[in-house]
Amino acid sequence: MTKCLVRTAFAAALVCAAGSAQTATAKKTTAPQRPKETFWEWALRFSGISVTPNTLKGAGEELLPGQIWVADLTSGARRRVTPGDGYRSPVYFAIGSDILALQGAYAVRISSGGDKPAQLYKIAGIAKLVGFSVDNPEEVLILREDDAGHALPARLSVSTGTVTPLPYDPQSNRDRQMLEHLQDWQRSYGGTTVYVKRESKEAMSGTVDILNVFVKAPGRDPRNVSLCDTANCGQPSLSPDGNRVLFIKAAL
Image (cartoon, rainbow, N blue to C red):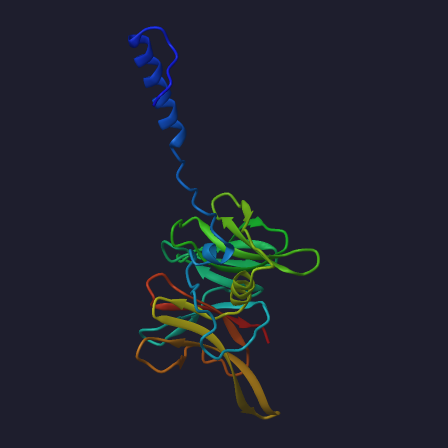
């Protein structure tokens, strides 16, 4: 029996109704907050990053600077993009045919129209450009190095030059595996994968090892698209339309 200690039946009804409303309000629960995305979940938002990394046998590669080249996957033609060298880690912009690359500590924009490469901004500790965001065409996944030489993931705004660290957890196995994947050069774009492979070649001085860029398309055998014989080639990335591969040809 409900205990409403008031003198009149009307007042009792009011007091009891108010008590019931408070009880109903107290029973309401807030919706659970969506957990924050982890670093490896963030990384999957960027072009070329897959949830099952390193499925093809490739080769480790240093970030050696050189000339930027492009291979046309339809015609098989190759051509040099930059007149000079000293470039590394080129990627196509998410929209259009311009290229973003590193030259020293600077992010450089290389116009598809043949204009002189333009330095955009200097980024302390910049080591590598990984790829553009599939959600935001102004955002690039990058790797930086701290004072101890450890790679750290971050997001770069190409419009402002702002660098925002990603929530990397060194205690997480999945985060560590994803970071290792980003440091490697295997990239998966839908069903097409680009990667670097070391091959032995005979030269006048004897057997030499050369790095080349390979493409593996669905239902097809891997093919060498850089065709480098004397200089190492690597650091590949695929164009948004899937028809061209950028790579670096290291200086001899």
